[in-house]
Image (cartoon, protein in one colour):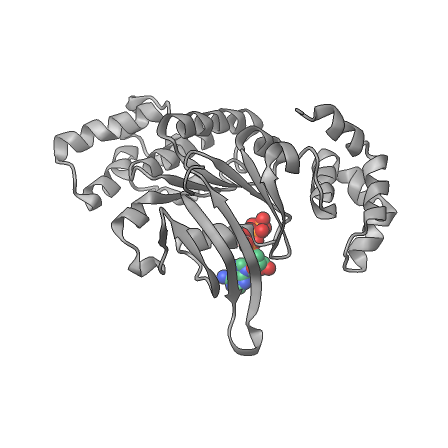
Amino acid sequence: MTAPLLSIQNLGVAYGSGRDRRFVLRGAGFDLAPGQVMAIVGESGSGKSTLVRAVAGLATPAEGRIMFEGVALPPLGKRSKAMLHGIQMVFQDPGASLNPRQSIRTVLEEPLIVVGRLDGAARRRRVEELMDLVHLDRRLLDLRPSALSGGQKQRVAIARALSMEPRLLIADEALSALDFANQDKVSALLLELKDRLNLAMLFVSHDMRSVRRMADHVCVIEGGQVVEQGPVAEVLYHPKSAYTQLLLAAALNPAAALADPRLSAALEAGGPITDEALAGVMDIIGANALMQEQSPS
Ligand SMILES: Nc1ncnc2c1ncn2[C@@H]1O[C@H](COP(=O)(O)OP(=O)(O)OP(=O)(O)O)[C@@H](O)[C@H]1O
């Protein structure tokens, strides 16, 4: 078996201090091999961003450890260049993550200047290669982000992340601000990059359609705990936990799932959602049949 690129072990993150201190993630763990995509799914507030932010060094673990390329990751300020460059992140809002006063050329060249490995001519060539890699016309280089569409801006954000030659790309809801057509195009680009560059990804998403397309493995988080994880074919087509089944049901037909009185009663009572309530909802919205129909195995 390939050694994992990333190994998350018993990870816990707490926010607040004193009596307000509260764990928002606890006991999370999984391995990710090079070139593989792990989708992180769960409802809003379940802890998905907290998990990937801890990997990126933007949240500090209170418990457990995160191993990257065989070495335990320290807090952000103590990470080596190889660690910092090796893990890059792309965020939800491509507009907010690009400096509106900089040309696309500057956006892409700046990190290369900071790294300082290339001279001016080599840097300019690298910037052009990065544009080619994300299928953007080099003529866009002298424009500012405001002249680009949402999909183009997200490609620039991806190109900037790739400039560091990462082995792990974290995409936190990176497709959610895009329209349907661009979601498909950018997810196709990410898959192409994964194969071409052997890039591993942590892919945080609410959207089961993109998860099905993008991921090799899925990790389901409920209330800060990993409730299920495994290959896509198992977790999405034969989900074991009631929570995963509920997420899928809500994704297939959110209005019908939420309108069902058994589900709303369970939610109002503060859960847990019983298998019985769930089975009723799944039958009502036809999710059981649909999942069996769509199962690849
Ligand atoms: N900096 C912070 N300080 C205090 N609490 C926080 C902080 N960041 C997140 N939280 C809380 O931690 C919990 C998990 O948040 P997180 O953003 O990880 O969830 P999420 O699953 O990514 O949600 P969403 O899908 O809405 O982005 C939430 O209850 C949130 O309010």
